[in-house]
Image (cartoon, rainbow, N blue to C red; front, side, top):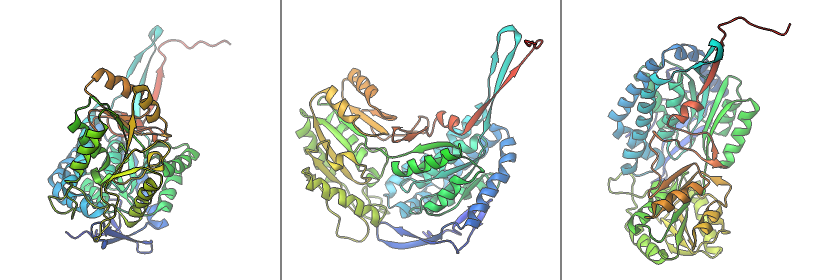
Amino acid sequence: MDAQPTASHFVNGAYLEDRDGPRIPVIFPATGEEIAVVHGATPAVVEAALAAAEAAKGAWAALSPGERGRVLRRAADIIRDRNEALSQLETLDTGKPIQETRIADATSGADSLEYFGGLAAGLTGEHIPLPGGDWAYTMRLPLGVCVGIGAWNYPTQIACWKSAPALTCGNTMVFKPSETTPLSALKIAEIYIEAGLPPGVFNVIQGFGDVGAALVADARVAKVSLTGSARTGRKVYQAAAAGMKHATMELGGKSPLIIFDDAELEDAVSGAINANFYASGQVCSNGTRVFVQTGIKGAFLDRLAERVGKAVIGDPRDDGTNFGPMVSEEQVKIVMDYIDLGVKEGARLVYGGHRLNRPGWYIEPTIFADVTDDMTIAREEIFGPVMSVLDFETEDEVVARANATELGLSGAVFTRDLTRAHRVIGRIEAGSCWINQYNLTPVEIPFGGMKGSGIGRENSKAAIEAYSQIKTVYVGMGRVEAAF
């Protein structure tokens, strides 16, 4: 597959190139080879994208929600028809195995467009009767120009998760993908136009942090939605607040996965694998602090190591590969530094811990046991295939330790005792949680974090609130009285 896009940017319904912007190489993580090049947006490109979004917002908002929804549903159908090609591109862009991208990336994007497209016709206000014959009504209105800033781990999905509710509500969007994975969002922009989206409603421009900062600071922008690290989120949220802009921040986590000794062992091991090694551990909601009750610890670690040993590490383009490379050389260095710290601080290396001696950016799935709460690997988000297993004895103890973090994106409980499951999950300070499951995020349910893991929610009806505003109109039906 030729990964080189037609041009670096997609603005006002067409590809746009400006080679005066900084060169951004696109590297295939499995080989380290350059497969494409894009250029970061110059100030002229940033202005063109914002001007296009500003010019398009009036006519798009004037359409009925049902008309807007039809466009999104057509785009969803096109994405599904082209799932194989989009998945292949996503694998080249991110290094994730094709068996993952076929089911978790473009398909999730299509689900989002279909869900919000179907929801569109139901975006209505309400009638509110009042005493004495007066009444009021509400209208749900778009915000205007929205900015979406994506992360590198799920570029297709994130472009859709942000644009679908924004466009459904009548907004326009300028989307900046991560400079590490810039290709997929351009294809989504193409598909939107093919589905009938008017030019200027969804625009994609490339760039580094300075491009994102320019978008966030622009007075025409009403809303900012970021997926990224907690540190980046704080900076972007501050910049958005300075302009009184609406904001959704979907940030990182150091999430607890709690396994009680009555858990079904195979399910618990599967949950821990999904929570740590899917996408080579590069998932913000991962449950990287695996708390295992002492009664099941030995059996859990033995079975976990046995199953992880069966991972097929290889070329992510091969159907049989189920564990691929990291996204970049920089991310490899970050993760290896954390692994070295884990060993240095006294954690017991149960499995893995090495970079593979082969082209590309491969790190073995890595399991640490006997991890304590004060170790760096138990406190900081690693964003790689590193699992920390911690012992616990009692329910109250594990809840307190699970919540002893500034972050609060996700959490999970594995137990056969559903009364305990609901009790414990109710006490976990996290926004997206699971019982006897992990990392399933269908678009019908809200996704987002508490504490330092962000603000606002993506997906579900909650996202409608994030991309719209309510106008209230009071209607007086009688005479108007005054004191004088």
